[in-house]
Amino acid sequence: MDYYSIATILVVLSAIFGYINVRFLKLPITIGLMLITIVFTLVLVVIGQFDDTLLLREKAFVEQIDFETVLLDIMLSFLLFAGALHTNFDQLKIQRGPILAFATFGVLTSTFLVGIFMYYLLQLVGLEVSFINCLLFGALISPTDPIAVLGILKKAGAPKKLETKIVGESLFNDGVGVVVFLTIFAIAAKPNVAIELSEIAKLFGQEVFGGIILGGLLGWVTYRLMRSIDNYEVEVILTISAVMGGTMLAHQLHLSAPLAMVTAGLIVGNDTVRNSAMSEITETYVDKFWELIDVLLNTILFIMIGMEMLVLTFKENYIYAGLLAIPLILMCRYLSLWLPVKFFSKRLDFVPKTNLIMTWGGLRGGISIALALSLTNDMDRELFLVITYIVVVVSIVGQGLTVEPIIKRLTRNAD
Image 1: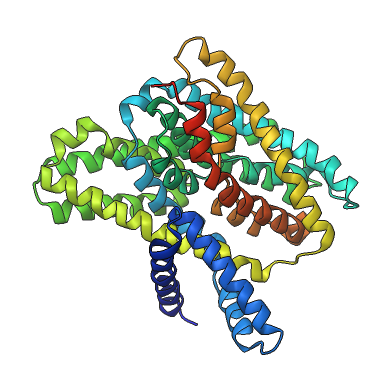
Image 2 (image 1 turned 120 degrees about the horizontal axis):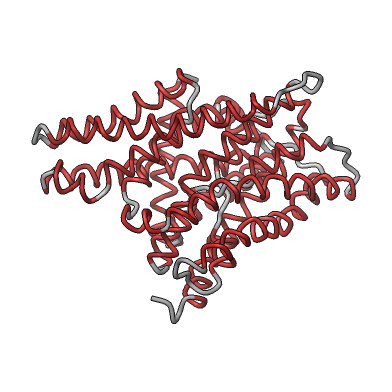
């Protein structure tokens, strides 16, 4: 099946399932679409017990989608730029200290905590897995997914200073998490080759800081070009070219494309640039265009997540490991945030129970699944795919449906 046919089927399903969700379920779009897709797939599985024609066709369709490439190399840049474009830049500057700590120290701490605990947990359920492979799982599951977080937080009514921490951390820890994963992946792929600490630091620094510098440059060039004209059609195209051209350039230079897109989006979207470079009509068109891209790609992404269950190997001990991993990962997330929250709460005004809210509001999503799909068979790919899928589904549905009432209850007296 060609790319156009695959894209067409995904868009048509997005439209149908999106309509069902808005018309009948009225759930947040990410949760509603994934639930509908999972139910749709399960119905096909049941029908497949009598006539497997449709089931085999859907399975063949899912196997043709390169989820890892589609999300990490194409969709992610658009989604992160769109998310950053609508993030409050002034609040982000105020909260930059804790956000940076959460996105770096928090991700690294969580990676090692999850890796250590998973190593012993898997032994308890009769699965012998090497420690480096458990660390790989820790790296792919530790970053929270801004795509999942942004859509749900919009309706949660959280105080702005708390929302900025959660969204800002999600935007940046995603890029950092991918770099940490790739670094550990390089070590795991060559178990018998000694890798110098300086090489790891160089790779990490090049990806992270290089990505941020590239994003800053892209954002500045886009701003200067938009400021020199007043034509909303061309200005919208300039933002698209910044994302597409910037992503391709980041890949060529081996820099972090996610961090580049977050940085570029924050620069183009901040109030100073908007006031000096965009007319009112340009601002409206830029915002509406990227909101539509955000919604469209979100719907396609979560439909793909729902369909992925067809190509997984659900062994009994894999399922047990996935269910036991859920509280373990939440505990590791809480512990990884504890020190930064304690340190910065003395300097900045934190909402009560910030650590608890950020733990429960830190949803996992498609990025974790995409990274798990990139594992090789030597890295226990099938096991970690199932565990990741279970954690992601429970995170998006369980935490996603309850984060709004929890935030409202815990922040009732906060500004």
